[in-house]
Length: 580
Image (cartoon, rainbow, N blue to C red; front, side, top):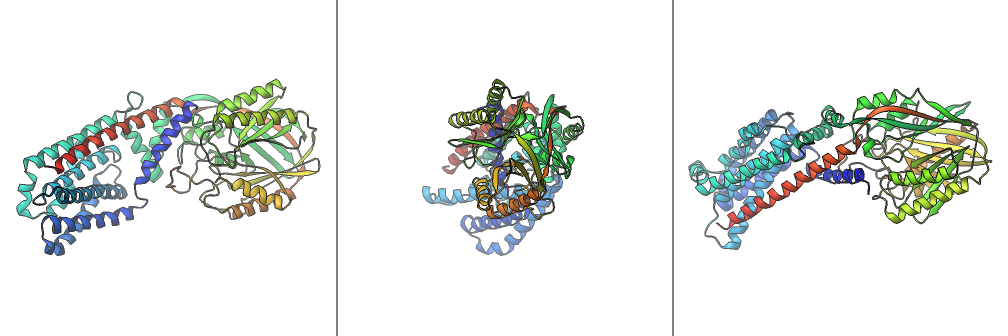
């Protein structure tokens, strides 16, 4: 396992924590009101035996809830009403849980009466919870958090509890002791987690806040500033095969950079930006690269795109071999030889895998060098979901690649024709597809037609490729491979564990097959004799590197470890209070 992949996988696992927040502010608004209503019912009926007070106290409580939510929104750093509502929801949920557990303790332990201690304790835990949220995700200093953490919980407490019980319930020494304990725990936890990434990460909280700002309001400046400050200059190679005919030109592009890190940060939409730079007549393939080669900012993306007029022509020709396909168990490698340049397409579909690791590419390049290929282009098809490739599958992949190269050197080359078409004129909009849409390249070699499909998407749903390939076969068309760009663009905030929809998750396979078939027929009609050029260019641009990923991963891991420890300690203290 490569270190950068390990770090990215750890960071990505933490992404699921962001799914705990409701998808809409209206959900938080409604649910917080419902939970506050339930809390008031149990407090007034079970704890105080004042059922009649519900009639006038409940409307006042809901009013106070809504007003304090508005006050919170004005006081937090971003002044986002939605974040104030989410904080209110989680706080009220914790209060209700304490109220119910107090009732359970009364029933199980056979206490003489339900103590208001549990209601006060729930309010104090609600307050402590707010300190944690205000300092970590909402960007307030500890001093400001302490100044406003009591506003909503205490206001609601004063509405629920009769005035004559305020002093006795809140000034009870045990209640004061619990309050001091929980507020101190929350404050110390906030202090330590903010410094969990030091010295490499100055403030873990600032990193979390910048991430949330970029996800919620597409405010990418904060995150990009943090990432770019740790990035470094690197020489990036981009290889291309450019086809020319009377119908124009088409390019198959293989950049060393990796899309990401996530939309809308850095090079997340680099595949579409490249596609448009090349006049929408290109397939931007996924190279063998990882997130260490992310461009850290949109400024870096613009600088990289500005270098595309400085290509070096390495080879020209007009002949190539028919495609060679070799499968070894799950691994499949498709190869074509353009003069002395071989291009290999690597896939484990329908079983799937994460990004092809660099060691596989390095070994393939060594095999190609030993067999006198001038250059080798290795494409990660990225066309089925899976985990990092295992030892057995990687060995099978290398065996298939070696067999493919050995076969290619024995194959005869023929004059080439090409036709290309894309989905620009079609209605193929879907949230599991990037703005580059779909494309199909048709190659006519030795009187036979071969099709290569492409989608501007982040991977494919397992089995989608096989469905489309079979659909083509039923129509007597040879679709040799489907590839994705691995774009990290997303038109919406996707609330799944992966953070995106692979192509075929939303769009139905039969619809996708029809789209590709229509585009393929258009590409076929555009067939023209062609020549090709092998192009390369190098660009000096900033990349993220692996160190920043490692530091981010360590900071998050340490913060979560601290959180678990403090949570367990707080729970033990709370359970102990139930017996007193």
